[in-house]
Image (cartoon, rainbow, N blue to C red; front, side, top):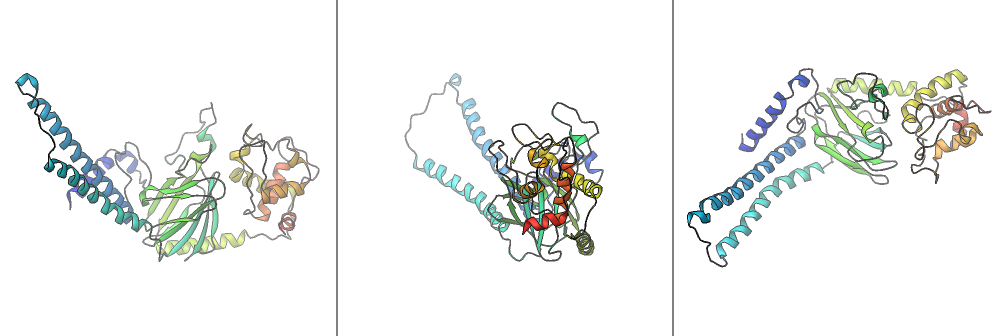
Length: 393
């Protein structure tokens, strides 16, 4: 084992020993209390990043000790009180060559391993599974594009209850859990020891998909497609967050990846496909208003509450209120159009995005819910999936 790896192991041991209470509960792949080093790596790239981090720290430490050691030794041993006089000399070819060649060699020694790792990080070829991660305010959407599970898609929302978060000026009413703000309702599931390519993009502002234990951080930029990859070598649950400041709910965009065995992954894929088939819309089905309101409340809580608030009042100056809205209380066709195509308004800095990725029944349900909630009393108070399907054409 090299000296750099020994030092890294020592620092990692200190980090683990300093956070025994958290690790004792079997939590992995997330920040822990009193952590002194990077998260424990579970991919080859993350291990190389950790080794580079340790190597760079050693180089910086050696330079620091050497430079300041010589400086303080010279000041102490050659001070004027001991009778020393300042030397009078001009240029020294040997010194100039030394202070040019030595830093050059140091830079090369640091750049070569770093370049090797960066090149490996960008090699997304020959992936076993490709997943598209779409950042949006403020959640992640996932589409399994190729490999086992192709066709699966879902949204991943923060699952920490709002009672744990609290409101501005209001303390939380429920004790915060161990995975506070780092838990979701739908985890990304992947098999262990398989190369997973992550394609990132966004539909509003810049986000970033980051899992520290994988050594992965890739920006998700509207109108651009970027990619990265990882191959997890250990089964477990690994957590990260959006790493680009993307708006007022930036802190509420966690990322959770569950790494499982091949057999468990196949079981998950089969279950997810059955679930998607069961949720497939039948546009000819006529829903009762109570069914739509019940379903709509869940859709609203998962997708709309962050901006428009649970009371429908919105955020003054930022997000429109739905309670008393002319659109919500007006013709249903106008509200359907807004959800399918979005809305630009000079009144608010944040535009209403298009939500056409939601199913016909989801859109019909959430519209029906808003038209029958708070103080709203819309004349056309019910929208059926068939109305939304017709508006898409």
